[in-house]
Image (cartoon, rainbow, N blue to C red; front, side):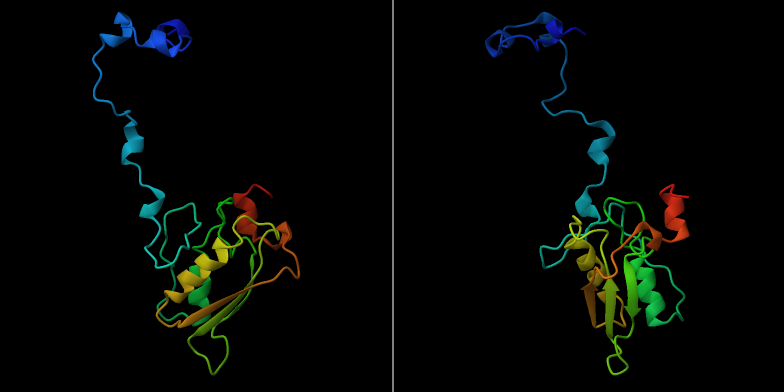
Length: 174
């Protein structure tokens, strides 16, 4: 269809004139038909309701962590961390090498407290606020956890060598 038929090269006053080739066609309502997009889930379908302004960063629908019922607290925390994804990279933060250490429990006298030592891909990471908050939120959902502390460090700085072989495969780095 030419621009002339669509009226895109006309002035607004000229568009109000009746154009039989367009105006006589049957138009169903004034809404735009978006087809499959109208039934697509929105981001809010995947974000749990919370009492803070924190939002989840994962580009994927939430995944329940998979672990053995007899798993240690540390194994459960690692399973939870594998459900947190960097919003720009389709790899979880554990496989990406952002998690340096998991202290679960944080100390012998604090059985319900967990501490995570993690880094970000760069000090200017756009997910610097949301990734640690998402990890904390998800870890605290475990029944055995009362409190999760996330400590961010840049010593040593993150490099692609910290990624697991699986992550490198996903990103076509090997």
